[in-house]
Amino acid sequence: MGTIALLLISYLIGSLSFAVMVSRVCGLPDPRTYGSCNPGATNVMRSGKKAAAALTLLGDGAKGWAAVFLAQHLAPGWGVGEMGIAGCALATFLGHLYPVFFGFKGGKGVATAAGILIALNLWLGLAVLASWVLTFAMSRISSLSALVAAVLAPLYASLFLSKPYVGTVVVLSVLLVIRHRANIRNLLQGKESGFKKAQE
Image (tube, rainbow, N blue to C red):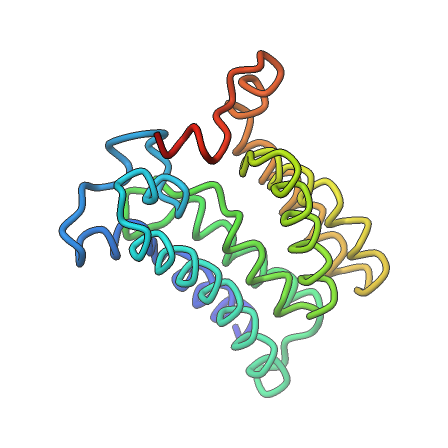
C-alpha cells in the first residue's frame, strides 16, 4: 500500500501544469492554444512574457525535484525500496506528460525531467544540464538541446545510479525523444526554429 500511495502522490504532483497555471494567474492565453500548443516554458515564452516563462520553467523543474525528494524521504517509513522510488520518479514524469488536472494534455517534460534527475543524483542532473547548455550555446535550438541531453542521460546515469534508477532514466529519455518527434522531423527537414527566430 505504501508504494501505491507514493506512486499516486508522485503522479498528482507531476500533474501540476505550471505553464497553464502561471498563464492563468498572469492573464495569458492557455499555452495549449497557440504556438506549438505545448504547455511548457518555451511556448509560454512566445507570449512575450519572460517572467511567466521563467516561473513555468522553475515550477516544472521544482515539482520534479520535490516529488522524488518526498518519495525518497517517505519511502523508509512506508516500507518502499529503490524500485518504488524509481517508480515514483517515472510516475511524476507521466503526471507531467498526462496531467489528470488538465485533460491529460501535458508538456514534453524537459524541465520536469531535469528536476527528477537532480533529485536522483545532483551530479547526474548537472551533467545533463551541462549537455543541454553546451548544445544550446552552439545551436540556439532548445529542442535539439533537449534531445542531446536525453540521449546522453542514460550514459550519465550508469555512472551515478544503481540499476533500478538507470532503468527509469532510460524510460524517461525514450519518452522525451517520443514527445519531440515533431521537432525531430523539423530538424531533419531543416525547419526547426532556433531561439532567436522563435522570438521574432
